[in-house]
Image (cartoon, rainbow, N blue to C red; front, side, top):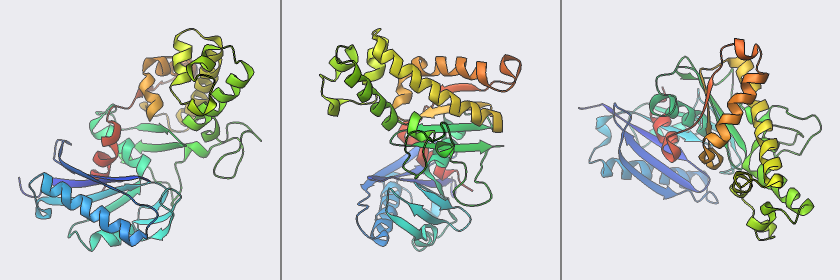
Length: 317
């Protein structure tokens, strides 16, 4: 059908992914290019355009078949103007991304934060399909979040809102990349999990947790603590239990403010499945305002993986 496709672009610090999305939110064409974030933003935008054109070619379509283009980008985004206010991953400040893309595509262009796009993608086609109110936590180097209310991204009154990773968990706690101390990100990111696991290995060199990384702290990753905990290692279990408690506290705050129908977890740690989500559901049920007598959202792992951002970006309006 003519004019029934949309282009979705997911811009990352290392890679650009572009997809052509049909009316059923299926990806019918895709392409990728390296970001090359050490270059000028103008050079990166040319490769974003190129990736989108490659995806159209892969789908055997032209841009005349598309009604809109959306792009998700890490950092602080002014969605009203399509400007990347600041992106640490890309080393961008005040980059007019929508304007740059409009120079090559004669269609409406929309830009939002990458976590927002991933959340929207999961609502449109993933783990939260059929729901209108959901919050996504992305657990990686940091903690990103996206909030969907009444089926639309909640951006707040201006750029920089909806950042649950930078809400306070512990006063004067661990240092955070944002400059504060004690943010949720500094306790619930994969980076924080690895930090705490390394500390535990130093205290308990006899533990299975230490054996799984062969006593080499540089080998520690986000999977090893869960592997140790699953095998009954008390040190690994202590690290994982503390990590899950921290994350649960952040989720409780999000639920108390927005009371979504669903909370989704994405990123590599989400692959732990019910070993992660079952205790999260129990802790949130216990601590959320109103407890078991209140409306309790489901906590699930996200489903779409690396496609979530493209599908969500394609659904930006």
